[in-house]
Length: 155
Image (cartoon, rainbow, N blue to C red; front, top):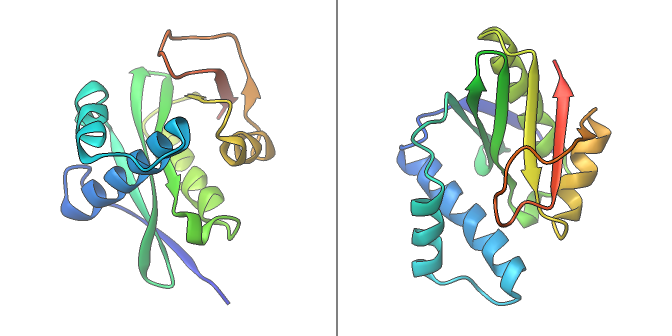
């Protein structure tokens, strides 16, 4: 039996930084069809830093840190989900759902009434997760060069 726990951590802490780098290496590698380089991961962090996240969570499967997610506030009523990641070895075991629940609860606790996100077309598992948890596709709300799908959920 597997057990997920989700805890808030500092987004600039060692554990969070490791998970963020793993997440970025995963999505960069999927985008280019080859392993990401350290320089590409560093550039992605520079292009989209996490220093404005209101909260960041680590998901642990049987005690091992294998997932993460955070959010920023776009305005007082709107949160934006960032860096949702579940390690490939732990996908399909409930970690994404556990992280979404934690992020949504934290966003509501500070007054958010909606949460949104953008994602790429090739991140099929993520798009399915969002749809299963009540996120609906909406019109584009940014011009991020990698964004191909935009979602929102009323909280």
